[in-house]
Image (cartoon, rainbow, N blue to C red; front, side, top):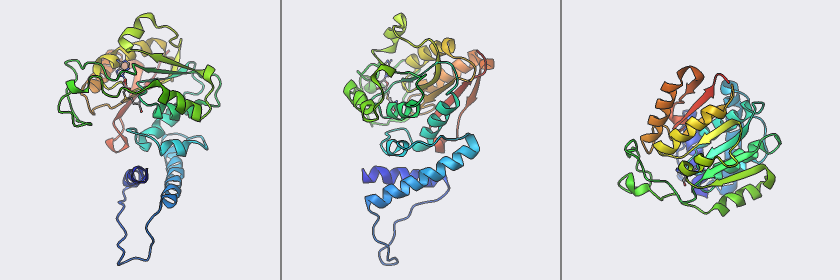
Length: 278
Ligand SMILES: C[S@@+](CC[C@H](N)C(=O)[O-])C[C@H]1O[C@@H](n2cnc3c(N)ncnc32)[C@H](O)[C@@H]1O
């Protein structure tokens, strides 16, 4: 836990152009940082970051539970999480529900749920096979071997986690049971019946990792989003080449309908698509 917080702080500090260096015992009277100090530092950094982010990209609403959730994130850096938070705030008045496609253990789901907790107009739809990744297609080649498995094919079935982890995280923040739907199954199959799928979507976080499911879901979202809706696709140009191919193809086919924003990689690897028309 201590190491994880340390890593997050190092990353955030790096974004501001600084480097964390160990305090040499010979040259300093400082005591070793303990976890309380690390936690307090992280809180301070987040508060300052929220102000800076707000000036550049739009206000980040205050939220008491947020920082505790940020400390828990896996795979999603806080710099990316703030784009999720900002996109949810920006789309709060847009018609539609909020979705996450690819939830794994539900850590980002908890962050998203917490941001919409007080907006009773929004339901949360969480989609996952809970059987891990499907087989990759020929558009998926291994770009970053995140688990050191040696080939993209070896990733089929990986990231399979029990649904209970997600339910517990939603319970932890007292997210009402009647405000979320968990869609269990491979999206390639679920999309045929679209059972309980939202009629409109105002914000979607797409984190399926591979080409085929992302292509399918972008096509669906194109039909259920209104002007101002935001689609965030994680792992753009990271891990599998399929993510970037799916997004680039979609943008090429729908050029005039979306504004595409790709942040600098220091923020994380993701793409933000904002709908420009109904
Ligand atoms: C990278 S993880 C998601 C991480 C999560 N968004 C987070 O931030 O913690 C990818 C997830 O997508 C799910 N997944 C991938 N392809 C899928 C598909 N075709 N249908 C349903 N779920 C899929 C996997 O089971 C896995 O849990």
